[in-house]
Length: 179
Image (cartoon, rainbow, N blue to C red; front, side, top):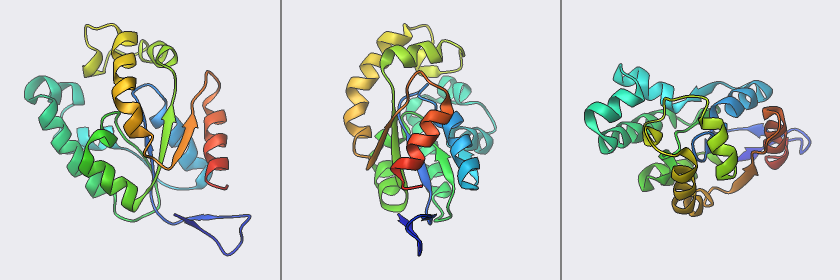
C-alpha cells in the first residue's frame, strides 16, 4: 500500500482510488489530492467518455446502464496498471463485484462519504447525472446510500466529506494514509 524508508514520508507505490456516491467530490478532491502527492490524476468517467466517444448520459440513453457498467469495468481495469496515480471513480464502479475486487487487490481504496442532504445540494448544481434525471435528488441519493454504503464500507479507508472546503477533505485523506 504505502511504503517508505522514512516513516515520516511514505511513498505511494500503487493507485489511490476514490469511491463513493455521486456528488461527494471524488473528482475535485482527487485532482487536489493528486497535486498534493505530485501524482497523475485520472477521472474514470472522463476516461470512459474518451474511450466511447460520447458522454456518459448518451451511453445511458442509447445503450442502457448495463452496457455502461461493462465499459466502466473495462476502463477501470485498464487504469489499474500498477502505476501510482489518483483515480476518481463513478458512484457505481465500486458496486460492481469484479471492479471492487480489482480495486481492493491492486490499489488503496478510499471511501468518501457525505450525508444525502449534502450530496443532494451538491448535485443540484449540474444536470448531467443519468440516475437523477427527472427525479428528486434527495430521495434517489438516500436510497442509493442505503444500498451502496455497506459496499463502500469495504474500502479500507473512510473519510467523511463535510460542508467545508475540499482542501479539508484532502488533508483528512493525507492524514489517513500517513502523509
